[in-house]
Image (cartoon, rainbow over all chains, first blue to last red; front, side, top):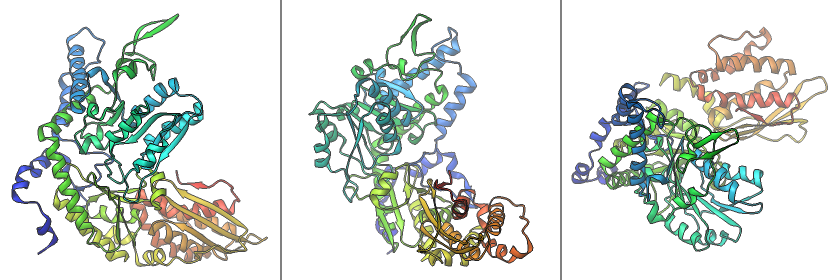
Length: 420
Length: 154
């Protein structure tokens, strides 16, 4: 009996999640790469887009496009309504208290920078601390380091264990009198670790410390409820969530956003402008200077509608099947090490081979049509922690299948043939 | 597969697995560090340059992919015994070979050495990998020039 047939989910489960139907919604998956069918396993970097998103963006430009919040004419009003409706969609998707708590940004990186530059520069003093973790993406490291030079704060780092889990005791000990914010990932983009976010927040709140969670990966793989988590800030990016690029979200509790000054100045964020002084609009608008990514945000709404139409629980269930199957099949390969063995783990698998560098793996897999990420994944401090210069990473999405995992394993066996 | 076999020729796999001159010579009088921040490759080049500008010894240490390791290894073999000017001429020719379909012109005495480097020419079909092949060469040039700033490919 082959490992495939041992591990492939039952027909009942396969019927419950119709991956073939999902795949038909993603036109790019029919692409051939170097004469081979595309096996896309780099959704952790950016996900592919379903037809529903592509069609929505096209339809906006063909039938419903004008600048928002400005014109008195029909098209502007129509575009404004559709844009603003997505605020409600996002709020519902992450269970925010209201649409006013949803700020649109370019991406998660900009959302973190917004909090650092608006909240941080207003409320942090020299010697204050921001507590992050060892497994942060650069987007949740560098904005805080910039505050080290700008106002003299200190970035503290909570450690992880060898399985890739946050060490909660050590984290709790680092919550001190100078800690002014905790900024930690909800799901590691390298290790796949889903962090105990509710516990992270509870421990911080016990000391009156607000918490920002980076949900860039988590929101794709889990059902996120910001109010159940009691997160103060939650950031995510649209392009990993099957939406267009140029769309990101900052969720902030109303009371916090209300006391934050604008991040950038310009049009659309003002109440009145005169040369003797300018007043700003209420949140979230005061944080959205200039014309936003209108069609793209409307496309993000379509992406969320699409994910919800398939069902987040069902997607998560399917991805967990993929994760377990891929992990088991990868373990067949001699000399392969998987980094990240958290108990609660998304379908993101980082690995290395003893015989080949991740870049060589990436090139040879590409020749087989298998797209993975090779490198430091914008998490160099984590690479140092793992003691490797880089890893290869296969990240699975709602449209991947067991056959994709099989193609990955077959291509890795070719790498071994060449290098071992 | 032909492009891939072209990239990973046996000679390259061999140098990648068993790099030559992978050491730190005690009498080196020049060194430079190179770094490819996108992939985490790091290399240190050690040179022993005579008063007359002759490369008497050339070695390297570091970590990287098969392409970058093989490139560094072959470079150390080929440049040992060359003058500074010859090393720079070979650098120019190698760089052009990796990035352009136009064959570089090379002086007759260096033709055999350049021919040996031709096994690396497959990288030009893989633009993302050109930096892997050229990192050691850029770093060697920095060592020759006595640069004290690390070489970055970005």
